[in-house]
Image 1 (cartoon, rainbow, N blue to C red):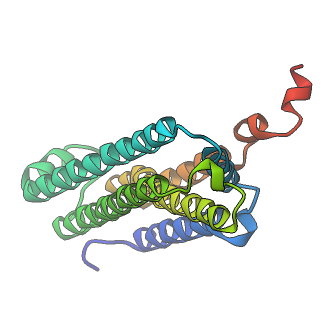
Image 2: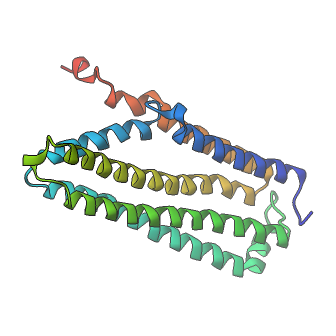
Length: 232
């Protein structure tokens, strides 16, 4: 139907399932202190606690600005990717003529356009995530600027404010990670332009690489408490 085969349906289901499973692996309760992203949340809180004790907070604002600039870069890249996908959608005839000469692909016009629409939606999702992360980093800067002075560091109000800043920075980082997740899974999605088997293989490869980066030993050994003892 619409130029898709049963393998295409299975591959699309596999893709969606992999994305959902990875999402819960990163943000579910199971991920607490297991994934690299969740472990970094504790360091955001530690950062804000140290910030509270500093009289001069220029360095802290520069760090947030650097994070915000990185987010703006990815948001701009998402717009470029959306534009490129729409350009491909408008050039369907030329692209199909090119693929018709390849032995592994003979796309149906309707399926090609639907696939291109799908990857456009993925990049649109990435843009919304990066755009909201940028805004949240802006809110983090505002909260950072309204932090009580060091002389009030021990007061309940100051301690509560530190938690607010850390939570806002954590939320911004979480949406940034979701935007990057869309980028990574978009790479796996490209396999669908070949066939359903390549789609599943590419999705599985991306899933394994991303999981290894979050839970692999190489990603965690720097944060282990015993690293100082091993290298002292």
